[in-house]
Length: 475
Image 1: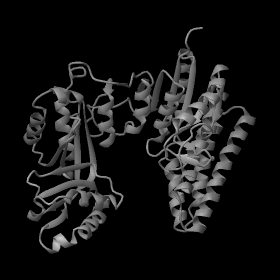
Image 2: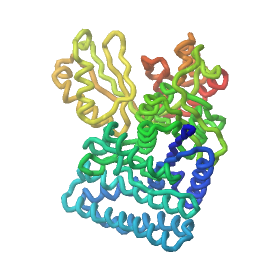
Image 3: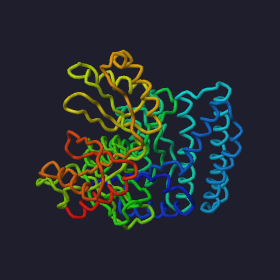
Image 4: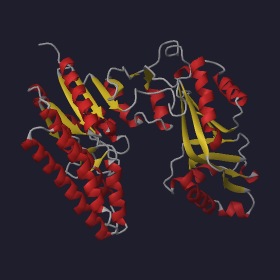
């Protein structure tokens, strides 16, 4: 018997976000079934739903439940409109609406309980956050079946086993492998497409957990790795990974292929592509990964590859993409008394960590008289007060002159694995910015040498991205 080919397809929120989008998704699933022996579909919540759920829970934690009826009707309207438009079989349509309605009512119950307690535990937040995917899976399962494609909706809590680290749970791959194969393989053997939820799993005791940001992509990668599949396709609303944000540079184009280290840098520096965590299981299992556009399915999208070509360049491009993270502030700790004093950086970042803030970029003067790092603008005041507390004695003794923050800045990151093998890239980057009148406030280069990050004033963001994108075109 010839080996059966298995494909995992994940649909993002906009790809299942309306009746029109679902029509495209159905066609994509139908086409995949022609070319692949076995297909598994992973769905996100409909676009906007998870935010609505989490906002409802956040309001409830402050004792406010007056917005619940509006949230209830918005959720009904969104899901029921798609069900009414696409499910012709009346019995299936009413059953689907009843399943979704039960989940909406459980949101109300959860929010009321949160309001009584006056706080939302991570476990309660996961129970709330999971509802969007659970509504979506019943809807997608029903519309696919109604379109004449044999499918079965299964909530991934039945086979993705995780630890109890709520809101950012880690899968137990051994237990997940056993359960996933046991549940999904028999269905696929019968020619049925399992349609399951991204983003959520459950502890061995059955408590619902979520896999954190980018969780649905991660779910697809986990299922792909444990079955194992031959390919994982992530369906989104763009033609793959772009050279930069097309809203800034309309000439931005799709990258036909990108390697794992490049996409990890891009994802870290704000490009809405894949969460770096997603990539790991697929890479470890040697499975293909592709990012494609639900609304332009004939476009080949971007293919992820394990490594760059032997000459260090992919398709001749040294620089492949430019990304910008806005609304950051640079915080500087400076003072001659820091010179040669061990542990200043450790204490500084300890103080930052205590506020729960993530630092995307660090740069230190070689004279050790200053340390400078970026934090999200809205967290800058909290971080400053934590640092002033941590270094109160040194500030009092004038060993540290001051701890201060800039106005808003942006981090611009240039990514390309070919930079590692090409001398003079930094020179070209900074010459280009200088010629275009962009002032660089700070610089950091990743030790992987796949990216160079630099900080510019907020007003220079678009100019910097446009200027550096011209280098991609020229390279």
